[in-house]
Length: 84
Image (tube, rainbow, N blue to C red; front, top):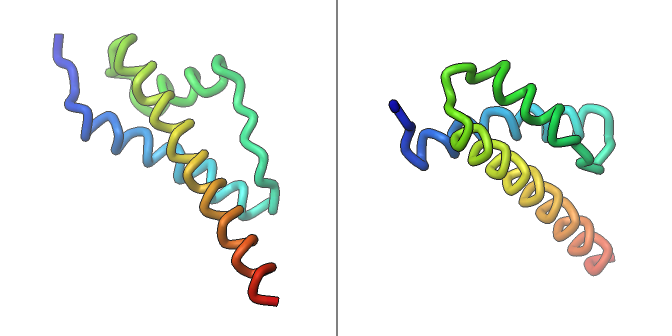
């Protein structure tokens, strides 16, 4: 068993989430509705050496990071509307 540290797994999550967020901005679509099977496929495709528990951890990290990006966008939009 060669499990990665939490920081390593979070880095993997960040790399995948970054792609999702970039695509959201590119297509101006800020709804994150990624099926578990699709997200699992992406994690396994990008990091085939991860063990099952690590895959779940990375998937949860991706969801968390994308949600943080969406929350930040909503906060910024609210600030813009309040300033007007």
